[in-house]
Length: 410
Image (cartoon, rainbow, N blue to C red; front, side, top):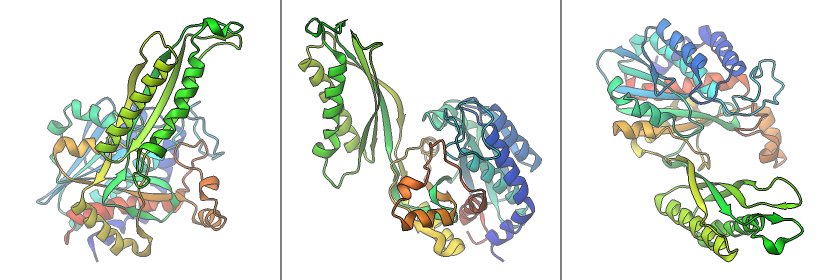
């Protein structure tokens, strides 16, 4: 029997507990750096399984360490935070916290990691080395990983040989997808304030209208990707918010734009950011703005670029275990801060996705050519991973990947 089969032989015995753990987390979501209950439950489960636990890293982050003789050190990471979204799934275990929801599947990640950690602790004859499970706060704002690093993670934790992580995505449950090289985009979020001159709505000649200035800026920004980048260069520029004014007959004196930019390499990232700066300033000048526009970077995520060697190793292990359900996943426009962790240790990493949509529902949507319309994506108020086989696959993927290093034949 292989190491993976030996460890996963215990899954049937804990499946109900993993599902209950997940439902509880989904009912009680917590925003970034407020994941006290979530972290406490994870820490309790790890201690009960025999892990040495260090809590409060970077606020609510924690690690569990299980040493099992000679061998590599493997770190696996799960993020814990929820989103400020009002749930509309209608689930019997829907969020009981107003305006907060696990709309991205981090509850799946935590529950799967706890299940995996328990299985590994219960089958130590099947593997050797050191296992580090890390529960990270505040992934959604892009600063949870760096908060743990700033709080001394590298001194509080054995140095891993590799860092592994996964994310549930709107693919059919059972699907597991890896990708070497670029996987997730870098993301930059900007808040831009445009200055005008207020006046009565009946006297526009006395004003410098920031609403018009903002409108012209938005239109021009849409040409950055379509006209300044090659068609083969992937990038996304979204103006997600425009705020200005308080009434219909008052021309305000300022407008605020919030912009999100997704790119996959430093050269494109720089080019797009420079274009945004140039266009915003030029439109302000064209509108006779009395002040230079103000730029504030409110979030920045690094790109997730999977290292070749560990990705090949995990992909081979997935192909052997999952068979036809193991795939090469396409480039994703979402963003993550997970890569800040291996970067702090100076070690390679790989990150993969797995599906959470009822396979029959996905097949029906695919047959109609309506996957994008009919399948709720991460961050939707309707995002609701089907319980199984999503959780089983999450536990299995962590196990198979970790044992590619820690297993007897790894």
